[in-house]
Length: 514
Image 1 (cartoon, one colour):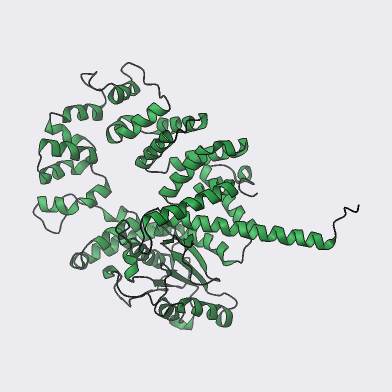
Image 2 (cartoon, rainbow, N blue to C red):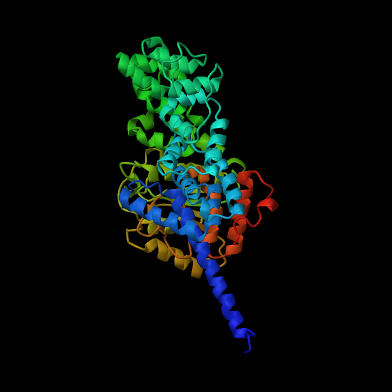
């Protein structure tokens, strides 16, 4: 029997391998878009149950078929919800991984947990306990994370239930004695045994049960409960607690503290908006009424531009001529759980792209035709096609834009499908050399399509959660355009894993490539 493979068979094998690689790359990009945008919460066009079901399927599909890529996603700019899901599922299915994979996963998990907010990490630890995940690697990861916490006494007061659950799950030793860990153990598991604590916060919590003066020494979220217990007036409590508030807590209570000082439009304690993250600052701006935005125009615009310059970093002014289409249609109002989130991302991108563009070479177009970015509101249909036509018009000097960026949920409906057709004709007839780079960033996950809504097949599309991630997302989006192959995508993931875990690139080579 002749076992020699014919040339036709070899070609067929090569084609099949190429197709398999392309499908794998598409699956990876699909999952990355979902992991960036989806949070399992209600969106404008889909409910929370649909979102969770769709996301659960994607996580299971990618974990089973592309486990190394699934773990490598922790090194990308995915949101906290999906990062915690990935960590949990990797730890739950440790038996499916090889020793080499477990080592790589351990480094990625440790690096990602260090970036997650403490409440989310403690919530994750609670989920692992309820799921009965208590293997040696899980206990080691939890112990290392707790050991790296700057002040376990603070965590014991602010996240008492979470820390207690984690300590019990991993059998964290809390010996008797005067050491800080011993005090934390007594505080968590033997309350009332010690007459006083050496740790300031632990003792403040003890005294706050009967002493109003100790309430202001506690973290704000803990102090609120004690203030209510003592019947303290909200205005008095906020004034005393202001020095210990975080920036976000100051923003949330700004109006109440201003009322306490009887100054209607001034915060009781100054809040430096210029140090706020760009997207969070945009959310705050949109939460204000039109009159407040107009009265504080110089302050708010200056803060947005400062945050945008900080987010642009070394990329500032390097993108050449940039034209942008920004979606402020009614669907940008988001949902009850994600109120005005899509519009906030568009507003933040507007200022970031202005910073990224060359000086004087930026043009931003809102779908509603609004000319004042500070006063935008969710309103009207989504005439993306008309705005894309306007954005492709040459700028000063008759030059076409170097980049066209579209920030929208992709539901082009006035008329439907016009934007995709405009971009198709533009690419095929007017710009076949691709002198203008077109990128669509979408802040809304489409549960039914398991991806973000796309405008056209040939347009690079990426999901976006925070505007600050825009430069990195543009790099990912180029893989979806079809001009680069799977090898380049896997090499990009390898580089991100190497940087994220602090390894030399050579050591991480092959961690993702199958």
